[in-house]
Length: 130
Image (tube, rainbow, N blue to C red):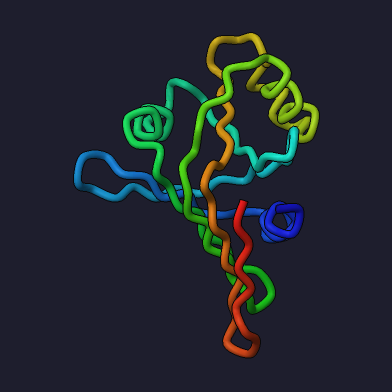
């Protein structure tokens, strides 16, 4: 899982896909953090992505960096503990001017039943489950 988090951090931006009814929704994200041996992302409760994940936790992430790409598929499960939110904010200080662990908006999700595949045109794919 550390390899997955490192890839996402090196890429800087990844794209998170969710569904809304029968319509896929994709948007850029930038937070990836390991806390208590789980891979977390962060968003705000007021955003549509939050509502979509609460209805259907199945999601996929894709990122590209230096000729390689990663796809992560799994379920994103909300962790409503202040400790989890604060850990994310500590890892991304730039978020602290817009979010706080106890503001009622900050939300973190962790991957469950996830499979990540790192691929390229020149190497065999690497698959990581967590």
